[in-house]
Image 1 (tube, rainbow, N blue to C red):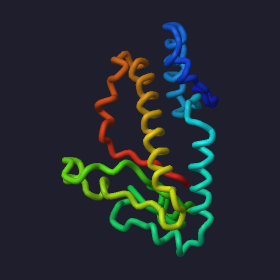
Image 2 (cartoon, one colour):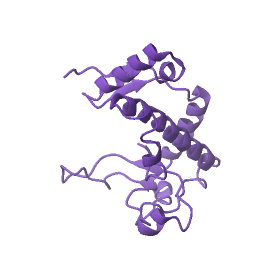
Image 3 (cartoon, helix red, strand yellow):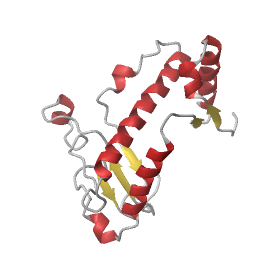
Length: 180
């Protein structure tokens, strides 16, 4: 096993010939040895700067204001979680981290929302503290989820499955984006 984190080019896979595509898939499969990989992407720098700037503005607020955006009962699936709230499974000591979690709203009446209401609750985002953040973070989540789906296609091919093998499996999945 290697300690190096590989850098693979998702865009070369998507626009390349058969040889380039195979090389990228091979790189992704090698990256599974460490569980980490870097990849190129097509998320615009201006968009990322806007999203991270808004998150920095939110995290720069005092604890009392951030606590207004907690989502009790959501099991951390949405909203703000403050310092010393979460504890890693292998520890009794709470973590010195704060985070904001969000994902896509699943429509009322959806079977997953009926069965797992705590995982599919309405999203809690700090719009009142940082105007415009909801639209930006929801778009950020959608773009990241799509990037993940695109990357899963590389893994599917590396496993010998059809390129779109995981597409249906992750549709409506309980995914969230976490800013720490």
